[in-house]
Amino acid sequence: MSAPTGTFDTIDQLQQALAAQHYIAERSLATAVFLALKLRKPLFLEGEAGVGKTEIAKMLAALLDTRLIRLQCYEGLDVNAALYEWNYAQQTLYLRLLEASGASREEMEASVFTRRFLQARPLLQAVEQSADGKAPVLLIDEVDRADEEFEALLLELLSDFQVTIPELGTIAAATPPIVVVTSNRTREVHDALKRRCLYYWIEYPDFQKELKIVREKAAYIEPMLARQMTAFIQELRTMELFKAPGVAETIDWTAALVALDQQALTLEVIQDTIGVILKYQDDINSLAKGTLQAALDRARIRAETAG
Image (cartoon, rainbow, N blue to C red; front, side, top):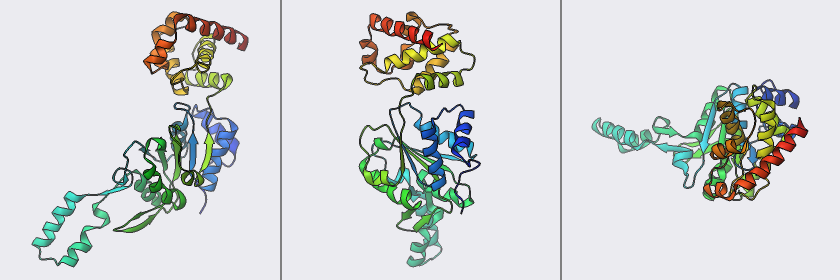
């Protein structure tokens, strides 16, 4: 069975395809994604929030023209929400019908725990929907938000692309799904899970890469404004903030400044739109007017030299 590499015969092809979808990936990231496809291995992406981890899964689904199945992790996530759940209401109704028809106890027991009464959740959906030969992309997003017990639930899936349901047995994927696991590293994920994946840490982009992202997302943005806002975001990331702005905030800020028809970055504009890039009031309060002005001055100098 061939690996689900789509039309990507080389790393360069994959990198160019991502760029065509306005996702700027350095070669090392493109290599990790390519190998995950080629080797049919889950890809574990770690990094700060907003650096583009989730977007990788979305881009792959779009490029491979396949379904994206997303499991958003959270504290308390369990098998009923992630894997499967029995439809007890329908089972009870069916048992009553069987009882009324005079069925034996053995017949009722054999009939109630069948696939027709099983409600598939994202993990089981990814396994079963691979049966048509076109592997879906399974995104297990922010796995670090889930409890450690949930990680154990993933091990069979990540190792063998199968799940076991006690009442039915083992269900294996005909074609392994393309699995992307993300973590913001709010806690350490167990080694047993990481060992089953290819690993890649996504850094905050440097100035040139982030500037390229800004230009990709807003082709008609004023060139000087693009350089100034990129440099200003880079300045913010050097400060002691509870949550530094990620690329997602950069993209949102780009859209906001374009919507406001700005031609250049000013202190007034920064103060008016600071809530687009900083999401904690303590961080906003920590940036005095003088601090913002100094950061803007440095950003302007960088923008001039980068031009």
